[in-house]
Image 1: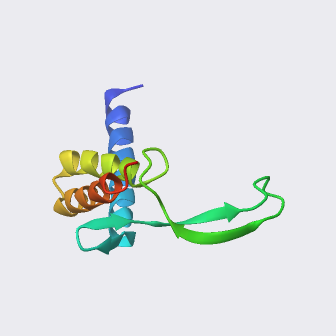
Image 2: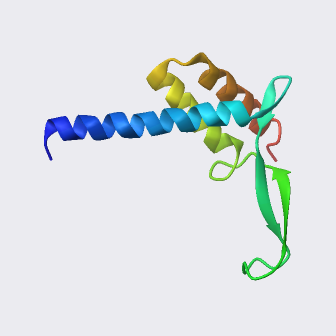
Amino acid sequence: MSAARSATDVDRWSGIAERAADHLCRTAYVDEDECTWMSTVQNGDLSGISGEFSEETIGPDLYAGTSGIAVFLGDMFARTGTRSFARIAEAASRFALARLD
């Protein structure tokens, strides 16, 4: 793979990551100094054949919750300097920390 192609790929993926971070910032549910997001959750039969779905806020988990989103947005702030990424990362972290067991 040539260096020019590699740089183009990096730019492409960086742009996709930045658009994802922008979307997360726009769709966060912010309450004072914490935030979370809505997600569709399957209730009942988890086989996918039947069951009902509901909209719920995501929890504090790393892989499927606000902690993971905070890590991603914090990294995007470090890469881009976009202040809204840091602000929402901090709010998501506060949400997660307030719900530690």
